[in-house]
Length: 218
Image (cartoon, rainbow, N blue to C red):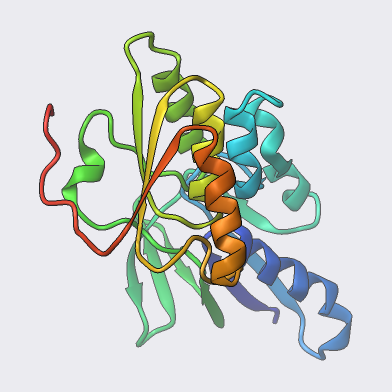
């Protein structure tokens, strides 16, 4: 009987695990069936490409590298708009929000991280993790009364978003921890060059550890 591998999460981590396992199926003795559970409606989306879509270089839909059917055609049970309600480690099973129970032999949890705090539920406050988030932000940016944008985070996606919003004429503030931009990617001297270039586009930076204590106007 084939072993079932269940991957919870269809972002870059989950998809790369799936692709690696599919490529190595012939290297293992046991037969495997794969199930991917994904909350979003899309297949594999290039998250790094989303800011460029907001910049107007192409439609948001074009960031979808592979549609769900691509994986279904490879024999993968690829489930979109599906969420896990309960995980039972004792009997190697999980329960979906629909009530369906799935048994597994191997489980991969690749759901990524989620922003904490109820402020993400307020009007005008958005996360930027997937295609659906990009669509909400695109709709907000199309409103004439939008003049300012505050971006929490000075990583690659945050800076790409800042550059995209700047081309739309918004006043941008990027807030992240010290000491510099992209600390996982660049040395401080190189990061300062990026900062100086972006400041020429009137993008303002706050690099400290102050926390958000209130969001006014909501």
